[in-house]
Length: 261
Image 1 (cartoon, rainbow, N blue to C red):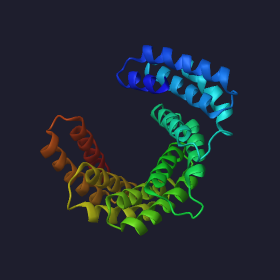
Image 2: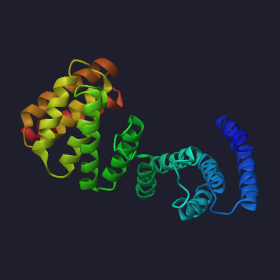
Image 3: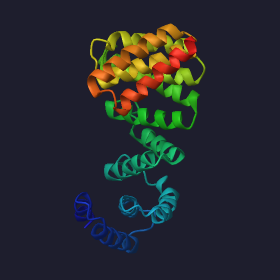
Image 4: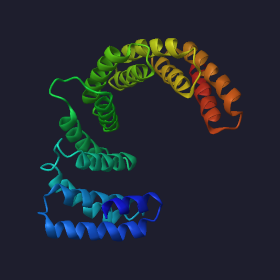
């Protein structure tokens, strides 16, 4: 029945899926103890259903019940429960509810991390999401520790020039910037931009823009202006004069030129 609800929900038939989810939850609460993992999964599925219907009060009511029982339920022996909690964490992230998503992601990281300490890419991606929520909570020191760990792991397994390794370097640089360690941030981003310049994809342009912001913060107006000009040329060629991305690049260049006087 829960599987049928999932299929119906995927088709956008949330009202029908809701009726099934309620029935599943009622049955499981009757058959199992309230703390049992199947009941938890049913609650999560119903909460996600309400989320897709924008029924936020219903979602919050179920969230409170879920949060009370989840700590004792998570077990690596039950991947279905872990996957359901991961879906809930992603929902919290989409809502920008950083405290809630941080709590869930920390639990998921603890459960999924291997005793050997050798992280798979799946676990590194989970840690990357956790770092992002900590970043948004302005918990820079915790984010920095995770960013360094992720970078070290990816550099060892994928090499220094792999796109995911470069993304990890950029994340660490931005965290250093928030910590006031601007010179460290500049050194790392300069290296990332140097490697990525050969490929002018959207991620490369973002890296160049981030590097320009760091240079601006260091008072290096001319270097920042030169990068902003480069980005603007790329944006005009790719998107045209009136695209929002191009207009944003124009604003960045104008700010650099303003600081130059």
